[in-house]
Image 1 (tube, rainbow, N blue to C red):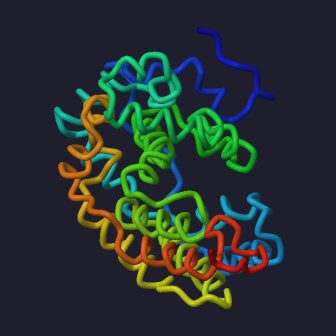
Image 2: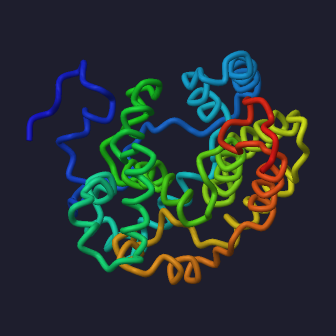
Length: 280
């Protein structure tokens, strides 16, 4: 396959890469070291606070507060026979997750069916997340090696974390997923944004256990084996409750309690900025 033109989106420039290839380099030399840049993170966070819809500010925060142990984790997994087997079988989670016709052939009640239901209901796709990150992620962050395959899986399992954890796409649910993800992929940016977002939610006049929910999510992510290192195709075929049991994921107590309290007060958890409605 020919290499895409230089004006292609960053991820498209890797369309020629066979991430299942036996001779794909594990980690190319020259990758930048993960270093913290607190002034940069703070600058972009202040801009994000001014306009919460300005998602262009999020990527620089993650660049400034990276997971410093990412290379060690990736190399450790890729150095195992199991890691290489999963790489050969699952070179692209995007192709697997966006093939709903194939996923629907799996047993009813399986993670695959729940995933399709969620993504179709929310109007989402795995490729859509790639496209969104492409808008702000610099091209030099894409390398033609196995470590990039590992990085891609960290991106592509985001919506699976929503589904398996039980955290929705409401404001609190997103902060909880960030905290859950921190324990899986410990970039300080996940924790920083999760608790900073929680602080904003606490300003709502109806008080709910916001920080308890975020902290609980962090503990849930810690108890769960690293999802990026699991065989996703095997999990998709299993009943979703069996997957949760396998991954030590229990229903979130404080997140569900917060939703119940909001509903009782006539508040829509998915629209916290709306006026408080009188509860039925």
